[in-house]
Length: 211
Image (cartoon, rainbow, N blue to C red; front, side):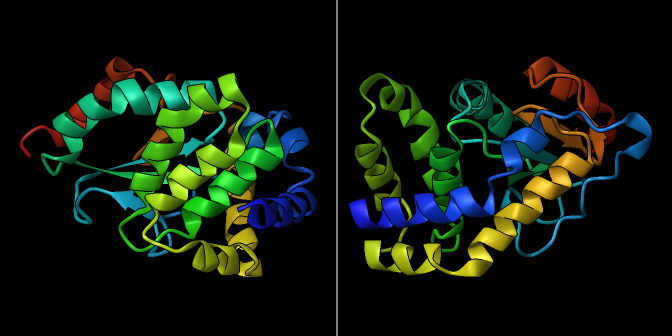
C-alpha cells in the first residue's frame, strides 16, 4: 500500500497543485457557470429517473463533509433517495491536506461499479480516526477493502491519466460554478444556501410534490 500511496501522492500533487488556491478564490457572481449536466461517468446514488438531482461537491478530508455523510445522509437517503424522489451525484472537490484528499478521491474513482458509495462511507466514517491517529495507511486500506477491487487493480487505475483528468474536470467545474467550500449542494442546478437537511428539504419538497 505504501508504494501506491506515495506514487499517487506525487501524481496528484503535480496534477492538482493549483486546486487549493483556486478553490479559495471566489468567482465573481456574473462569471459563474451552471454545474455540468449529469453523465454516465458521474457517481450516482438513487434512481436514474428521479425527478430531482442533487449534486454534491465534497472532499474526503473535509470534516463538514464527513459530518454530513455520517449524520445527515442517512435521513436524507430514507426521505428522498430510497423513495425515488432524488438522485444524489457526488463530485470531487479535494481540500487540505490536498495530497491525502486527492488520493482518496482517486481511490473512489477506481472502485468497482456500484461500490463508490461504499468507499465514500468508509472514508467519511473513518475520517475522525484518521486525523486522531495520523494513520493514513489504515484509512486507505479500509476504503480499498470496500472498493470491490484488489490493491493491484487500484494501483493500475491510480496510474491512469484518465483518473487524474476526471478529477480535475470536477474541480474546474466546481470553481467555474462558484464553489468555494465543501460540502456545496445544487438542487436541479440551483445552489443551496447550506447543507442542512432543512435547507435541502426546502429546495427539494416543492419539486417533488405529487411524486
